[in-house]
Length: 264
Image (cartoon, rainbow, N blue to C red; front, side):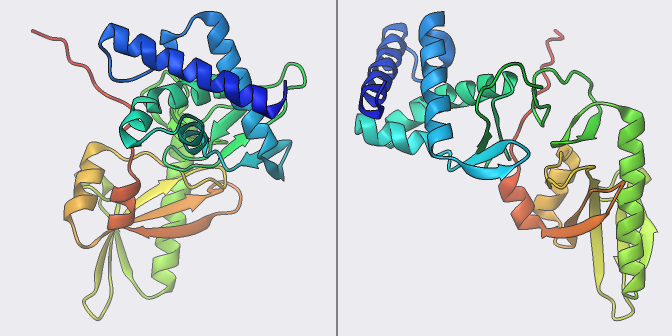
């Protein structure tokens, strides 16, 4: 199928989804509004587009610009309101792409998508938000923070805290661990000139600075001027520290889990 034919078919499929949503009185267009065979068509067209626009990255993966919504908007000549209606469809398709081991978003808020060409059975990546993750414990696996093994998490956490504490003490700061106080950060660092920093430490075992914050940590980031985030990547092998100010962290925070309390 030529790119022109592919685009024409994509337009037909998306318009069909918008029409079904209208008939159901729904604003948004999720993938489940499509029959199974059309879901497969949409996924095939999405994967082909991402692969065609991708540049080599590493380890068999290629980095695509991932501007899926921009393509759709140009093809359908739609405005902001309709684009918002199609966000669930885009999200669902990328999720299925990930479940099949063919791609994943590098970060929930980032545009680039890492994608690989299908060549038989391949290992499906596990990354933040993956539906196969079932534990309630923050994890530190190959794709950043998600949910998983508590013992490994603890090792990474301690290694990260040690790296941050060493960094600050080497620079002349007096560091106190306060994580047990549940104040919204892990380390309090004070310097002789009176400067004080309240440091939330996150560690991951990979090179990807993707982490999870608790509600208390995010609330503190939004309201506490001395708060900052220290992320230690490759915490167990080659600890590398990067710091982020509270406004940057709050702006990048994206809800991935919701507690549903159904008690009467």
